[in-house]
Figure 1 (tube, helix red, strand yellow):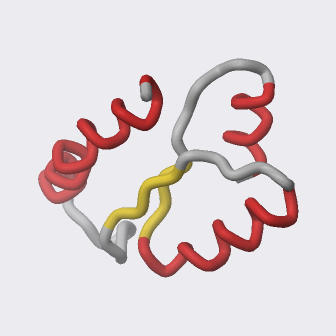
Figure 2 (cartoon, helix red, strand yellow):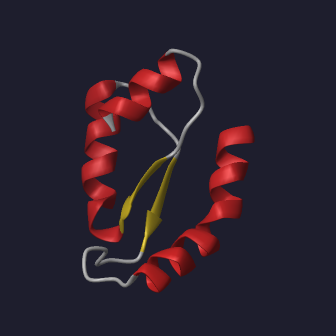
Figure 3 (cartoon, helix red, strand yellow):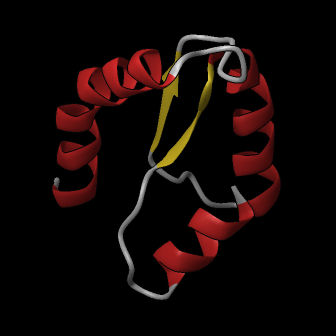
Length: 71
């Protein structure tokens, strides 16, 4: 969250991406930083996924991510 906040403040658009268990942590960080960065959450867990599963997660998220960056 710190990195995306820093980039956004520099004028570089971005989206914070994390898995579902980190929703409340992201909200707490946004509040603490005073910046509500665009964010997207994917299904958990991540570390046990195959390359094919990760590609499917990315494919499912790409349109929303692009709309948050360009929107």
